[in-house]
Length: 155
Image (cartoon, rainbow, N blue to C red):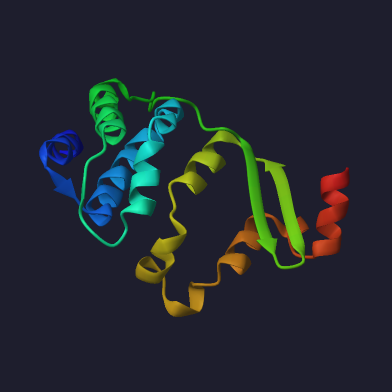
């Protein structure tokens, strides 16, 4: 488990930054359920940056943060029965600026869309159906034209 891996990092005399990065990555994934937990690692990031090419002895501050992370793991939870938010927001950025659009959907629509991962298009759709933009416009035809989108957002 992640907790056992964290304790192993604390008991080793030396660790590599790559090993620590993997452990912190797993903790961050779990910590997204309770974002306050993401405030714990600070010295760990400094350790990863400064000890990037060799194994180093675990600093006391890093060990303290690792033990704190391990200690709060059983407390990290999120209610999985929450209702889906019907406010749908999409954002994107480019070298010339950024854009944000928002629309409202029924709770059933939002729940259905949230259960689809865009990466699945490569495994579950034929190549001719991979076009995510065309599929999205099927649900939101008002956003096909970017100028028209500005009118919708400004309304």
